[in-house]
Image 1 (cartoon, helix red, strand yellow):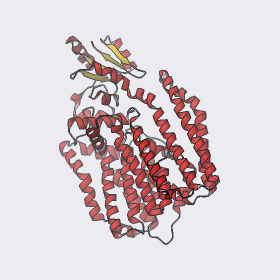
Image 2 (cartoon, helix red, strand yellow; image 1 turned 30 degrees about the vertical axis):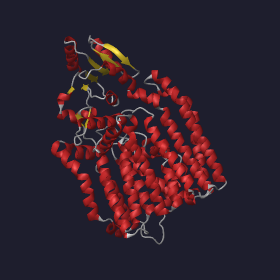
Image 3 (cartoon, one colour; image 1 turned 180 degrees about the vertical axis):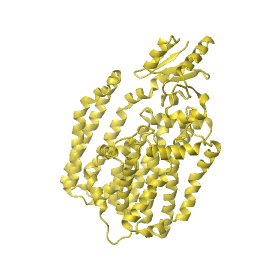
Image 4 (spheres, helix red, strand yellow; image 1 turned 90 degrees about the horizontal axis):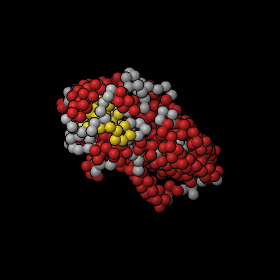
Length: 553
């Protein structure tokens, strides 16, 4: 019972079940706005237009991020058709790949049991599992930075041969290039800063001689440079917007209204690392200890990776939950190396904390319906979600109790495995049960009701809003009316693609009516009442708790 990591039958059975569940749930939910709808629609437009250089959203130039995610999603659509699991396939594979690579690196650098524990820890951490099931840039970036981290660990550990060191360092450089194509310069800045800090703290200056800098830089630029050159030649306005606005101004200025307190990410880490929170502080403290007799200090590198990236984004003026996702593989490896030698008491603490979380979840379930304050009509959707959260809480509490029993009887592998299964299953229940509420958020049912009303040339307007997911389900773009937000830069380049005022929209709408040309518009309740007060000719053809669809005929 204490050598489960040596059982090939168990490992392959766990692996098969894990992969099947992970991939299956990619398609059980609607694409929830804003991120999922946005990145699915960008890929749909790229695939439909055949333009693989200029990224667009709703037909408007959109240069906030590089194209790796859009490329991969578009390739998924080309290979498997349009759909929800296809839109999530890239991030799903990045999440899976991160688990496998983290486990492999742990095995190579720290031993077989540590590798087993590392894969279990990462593959069950709430935030990693959840983000691996969502179509967003954060998991794409994290998948690439996991390549960087794990390649460095394998290449630089003292037992590596010269050939292994060269090959894995080239993998590392390729990973950095892909990270840049995933989300920008942080793909190079974060690993570079971590390496500098590691050198200073470990006094291992010789590591710079083992990086294969010349070959690595050549490979890095060969992968990362072509798109930036091509998009800059085709769109001269792109370099300034991308490198200055999206990097410098986004980091230092509060232009995106996404600021948060300095402890923002520390608070998010508490639920994000569950079910391993009970051993996280000890694991990080354990990483400070220098290993005697070896030049390369992998635990120190992991600790610096996790702490620096958290500090880096904590300092930034722009904060979103997914920013610190790249630290989770490092934390999983630190947790794994600590759990390998952890005392019975510490294993029981981890299990006990999961029990408390489950009990807290049980207590919180009755209060969930109160979240529908702004949209009272959605209360029934939250009530339908309650049984799923209730079941997840029960699984967490029961898993913690069983793990505590295993830990008490010194069955350490079973204790770790039980915690991992409980964490993974709980997250899947929470995600799957969200579907009715997510479908409403996405406006999918409205989009389905609109389709019979549409001809190939039917104009669709979106007044004072942009529904990120509806355009994907409609499989066509809309004309924005008095809406700017993330489209501001693109509309400055192509102002003809929107109507800047509601008055201009009304004029165009009445022209359609006079010519007996059917048009549709997506509006909020407030916008509808204002249009009604102005005497605009319109008929409601579909509505939900957040929006209406109107037509002029």
